Length: 241
Image (cartoon, rainbow, N blue to C red; front, top):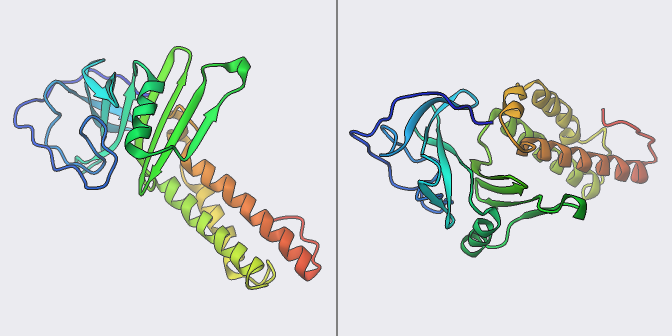
């Protein structure tokens, strides 16, 4: 959840680095852009997300995929845009439709049961950018973040890559689960992920973090490798490690 902290408005001497080529742009801003101060009309806030500083525009001051919203630029220690958050989005579905026109169809859609009509979300993965738009009655949100934007995500991706290599060893190279270095390496990588501090990130988000999806899918891949290994080698493994 974004924390609202009173701060000073910084406008003089504003400079903004050129948008990164090939990255998703939100209201003219992209991840990785460097700024010396907040843009004119935005306020510097000391703790907008995970203890990071940021620049927040007034509600409706910026258009996000054709819809007025309250836009926050979350900055890293180097003054570069680390993530972009749009709250109070006037019409999330219309914004999502415009995003689809610009970026193509989303990688994931989540339409809820009829009993929860109006709750839905869409996610686009474009290179290292992750765009997520969600809505429920009285709540609309858009976020843009980096696929490798956190230690937890980096640890989760390393575990996910090991799981994929493990499956290749077992399925294509016909190694047993116990003899595959990738299968055994996955154990240590999973432990490294478990030890990463994820509590702050979970407390400051309105969705399940991407790293949690990566780890969940990787565990499923490993269980598939276990099943194939058991079938090929006659083993009776009933646990990953």
